[in-house]
Image 1 (cartoon, rainbow, N blue to C red):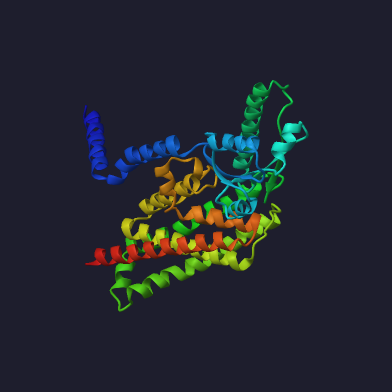
Image 2: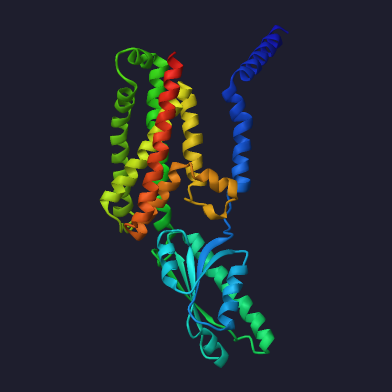
Length: 372
C-alpha cells in the first residue's frame, strides 16, 4: 500500500512538473501541430503553377492557340513574350523554371502538315521541377494536338513534336542540386548550434553575467563571441565545398569570391540566430532543442532544398522569406551549377545581411533587458 502511495505521489509530482514547465507543453502539443501544419500544407512533391515563359516568335492563330493552352494550364503560371531573350534572362536569374519557344514558322508549317517542333527549355538546377516542366509541357501539347486534330478531322499524328533541353544540369543528376542544398542544411545546423550551445553554457555557469559586469561594451561582447565561431563556420563551409567538388565531382562554375561573400552573409545570420536563442533560453538543453526546431526544420522544409517553394501555399511562401537557408540554397545552387549570376547572388547576400542585422539587434536588446 505504501509503495502504491509513493508511486501515485511521484506520478502527481511529475504531472505538476510538466504543467509548470512550458517547454514540455510546447514539445507535446505545439511542436506536433506546427509540424503537421507544415507537412500537410507546406510540403508537396507535386509542382503546381510552375512559373515558365512562352515565347511566340511567329504569328497565326495556331501559334497563339497553343500559347493560350499553356497560359490556361493549371500546372503553369506562364509569361507571354514575342522575343525569347527576356525569358532567357529570367530563367538564368531563377525567376522562371523553364520556357517554351514556339517558332516563327509554326502556323505555316502546321497548315502544310510539315514537321513542326516546339522547344521546351527547363532549369535543371531543380531536377524534380525540370522533369515536371517537360512532362507537363508534353501533356499540354498532346491535349492541344488532340483537340485540333478532332477539329480538323486529321489522324493522331497531327501536331508538333517537342524538343526538350535542360540548362545547367543536362544529365538531370539529382545530386548536382541536392548536394549544394545539403551543404546549406548542414551549415544552418552548425551555424545555429555553434553559438546557441556555447553561450547558453556560459549563462548556466554564471560566467556571462560576470563578463557583462565588466566595462566590456555590448558591441565588443557580441563581436568577441562572434568572430571565433564565424571563422570555424567558414572553415566548415570550405571543407564541405571541397568534399562536394573532390569526392562527388560536382561542377563549380562560380568564383571563390562570391562563395566567400554568400557564406559569410549566411553565417552572420545563423550565428545571430544562435546568439538570440542562447540569450532567450540560457539553458543548453532548451537551446539545443530550439536550435534544431528553428534552424534545421525550417532549413529542411522551407528552403527549397527538397520541396519547391512555388508549390507551397501563399502564407508558407511568405514564411520562407525569413528562413536564411533559403538564400544559401539559392546561392550555392547558382554557384555550383550556373556561375556568377550577380543579380541572384547580390540579392541573396543583401537579404541575409538584413536578417543578420535584425537578429543581432534583437539579441542586443534582449540581453540588456535580462540584466536590468
